[in-house]
Amino acid sequence: MKKFSFATLFVALLFLAVPTQDAHAQVKIGPRAVLSVGDISDAGGDFGIGADVRFLAGDLPVTFNGAFDYYFVDNELNDDLSIFTIDFNALYMFGVDNQAFTPYAGGGLGVTRASANDVSNSEVNLNIIGGAEFPLEQFTPFVQAQFGVGGDVDRFNIAGGLLFNL
Image (tube, rainbow, N blue to C red; front, side, top):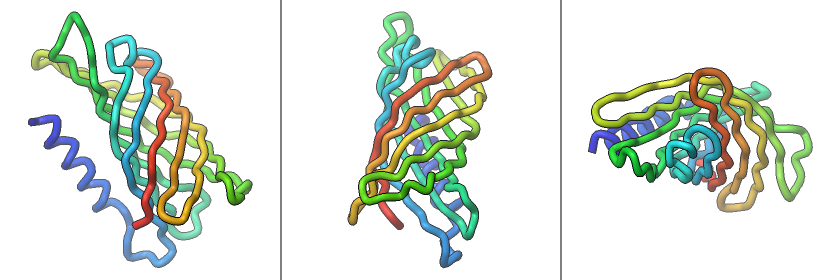
């Protein structure tokens, strides 16, 4: 229950952090699924689900991106293990905007939190991201690869999801 409460609070804070008064702000939010390779996968967290929010504010050349992922952990040694990640990134959309897709690259900070048996550990790392959005009329599918370096947890995941305009 504590995990669900934290996830709900985080998504609510993302909504509050999005600038809605600016007429030039474009906001997208939606669900995502994550396949993990690396230390999270080694701990049993091969698959996760989460939320992604992106906003372009004013004339800045970057899109701000926040994400939350909760991993379904299958660990034979510790069935009480839970893992989630929080990411804060800036994405640069390349000028190749065409009808099929818009590629992007970026970076930011990622936090990985693992908890088991009332013991928890948090690690911060730097994110490197590359991906593409596929704009459609009703929503925008996306796919990306993310690599986290630094700290004690090496992260590599492939994420995909749907973004809806607010």
